[in-house]
Every structure is written in C-alpha cells, then in structure tokens.
Amino acid sequence: MTHLAKYVAGVKINLMRSRVVPIATMSSCDIERWHTLALEAVEPNPFFDPGFLLPATTNIDGGRDVELAIVEDANHMQAALPVRPLMNIGGRHVLTSRPFQIVGLGTPLLWRDAPPDVLAELLEVLAHRTGAGLLALEWLGEDGQVARELRQAVADLGMPWHCYKRWDRPVLYRSQYEECGPHQTVPGARR
Image 1 (tube, rainbow, N blue to C red):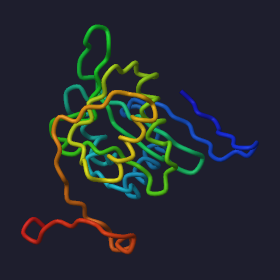
Image 2 (image 1 turned 30 degrees about the horizontal axis):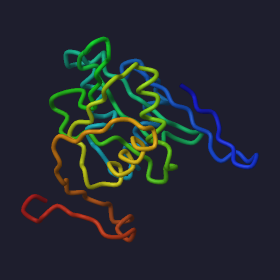
Image 3 (image 1 turned 60 degrees about the horizontal axis):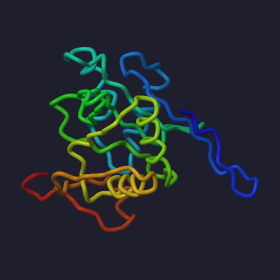
Image 4 (image 1 turned 120 degrees about the vertical axis):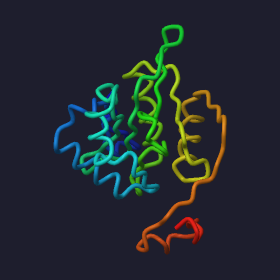
C-alpha cells in the first residue's frame, strides 16, 4: 500500500509511503534508516533496533519469516514494527509484534515528530498487505505516547481493540529531551 500525498485546499501536507519488507532481505540504506528511527523514537525500544533483530532473524528458527512494517517519508522512517506470522484462524492471518521469545517489549518505533496519522497508516499496511485478521501487540507499554496514538489510530480506522493485560513500564529519557515535560524514570534500585 502506498499513500502518496494528502491535500488540504490544494496544498500537499505530507508524503508518506508504507510497505512491509522481510528483515532478512533489507537493503543497507533501509537498515541505516531503521537504526536512526530506533535511536530517535519517542519511546525507544532496544528490541526493535536492527542491531538486535538482524542477528536474530538469521540465527533463530523462524527468523526468515520476520518482516518489518514501515511508514516513511522522503527524509526518514516515521514508524516501524517487526511482525511474524503466528497462526491462521479460519483463513485469517494472525501476526505478532513479538517476533521471538527473547523480545521483552513490543512497543512500535515512532519518530519523535511523526504526523498524527502515521500509526493508522502502519495498521492499514499490515491489514492490507499481509492480510492480517488479527495483530497481537504483545508487551506494549500502556501508559506511553505510542500506546495512546495506537488507540486513536484503531478508533479512527474502526478496528476492534482488546487489551488483555495492562502494565506501566518505566522510561529512561535522554537528558536533551527531559525539558519536554513530566516523565517516569526507573527507581534507583532498578537503575
């Protein structure tokens, strides 16, 4: 699925492209852009950095099945989510955002200044390109900006949503972003 442009009163307001790519066949340019997104994400997820997932896809059983759903513009990746087929139920594909058991956090990568419709575009490309009937977003931090924007995207698209278990995850913010407002930190004993 490609979303070329949106126009308001004849003025182009953004240019995005969405796609799903097998991680094992990604180009070096895509990997570099993915790594930049992982570093600059509003809620960093080290399990979704290419430095973690690339070795896993080549060395763990089922790794060749892992794909990366991407929304990007001309400058950089706006959002990314690794997915793996989990099962088929009644002809509908079930995807998981936890491609391997060792992945302990399933929060999608979202660029810090991403437009509000980026996660809706990510969900649409997963639904249409992969034929996903169900996407299991596992180990998703419920209290963060990404979860809030995902819930909004689901509502905007009229997709069903069910949360089985909720939990809060501590977030470490880099010092350059601390002035952006209130935040959680890891308690001293866990730090």
